[in-house]
Image (cartoon, rainbow, N blue to C red; front, side, top):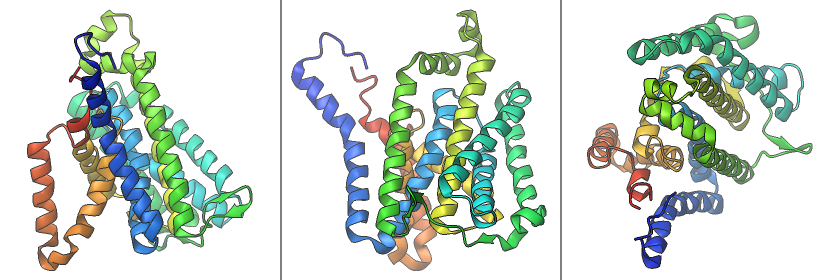
Length: 321
């Protein structure tokens, strides 16, 4: 962040405090869930898994301004590789998760090289097809995925041979993973790679004129995004202990897009804030019973009208200096 010389010290402090508010909110929500445990911990755990997925999606859609409706395919690869290796072949979760991420990144490299030559709506349709193909494979390849029956008996996360089966323990691990992902995203945005992505997001033609290899940077952002998606898929199956094709269907695409835009596309805190808000809103409106979906939809519309760049952008110090 570049602070103008005209900004005084009190102004700088206010800007820093303003930028910390989303993180303080997220920390308060996670801390409360750890304290009370039970259902609150389960809801926040799912929100944090989505936050990992949306952080990767933000690298491709927010930082590089590309569109992908097919990231659920890479979550499915990570989730199913982890589920099959641990439940059917006795692997430990961590190496299974690592292999799932490697498989997803390899698949993204094979798919992304021809697909990323497309632009705009064509790229969106191409990536949507990737997600649909992955869904059909999880349904039809029954000898491995068990089809609609799904795979059960997936072991929980484990560290150094100790299984973390309690809801509070899993929540702490997920919080650490999300914090690591957010730190990586912040470092990427400030790096030379992040600045190149910003140039690509501004104008691919102008970036190419500056000597930036646009195709290579788009592919690298796509691979990183696939890695985050695969990690989220693996975390999900180990936290829930079960996986079926519906988990990585079109609903996941819609929910994660909502999280990204509500939280703030292109911001570091946005994926986490969006995942928490979109996950907690249905619980907030549960008291309305029959009107829950109506209240939930109205709240999302109001959020997008009055905060079109997402909630995190309201507290962003970028542009204020």
